[in-house]
Length: 106
Figure 1 (cartoon, rainbow, N blue to C red):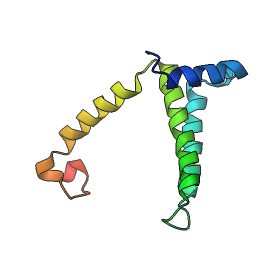
Figure 2: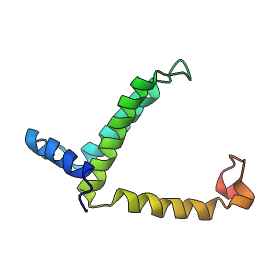
Figure 3: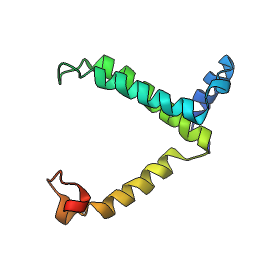
Figure 4: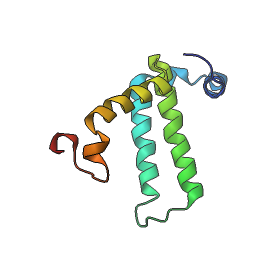
């Protein structure tokens, strides 16, 4: 995966602390879920979560997602674009616009 600056910073951060030994794909996937739960907790009692709290938890989720992609040798931009194209096919604008209906019921 090409080093776009951010990934280099993340790799250096992990390397300096010798944490890659703990970053198996399964551990990183678990961490994504744990941090996503903490992000959701920001909204537990109100839709008006403090932006600073949301920002921190969202950064944690994104960090673990990027580190998981890196561990698996996947390009985050490429996999998002591939998934976006698949979703475009499932939800064509003419049938899905303004609707939350699942693709198999459009």
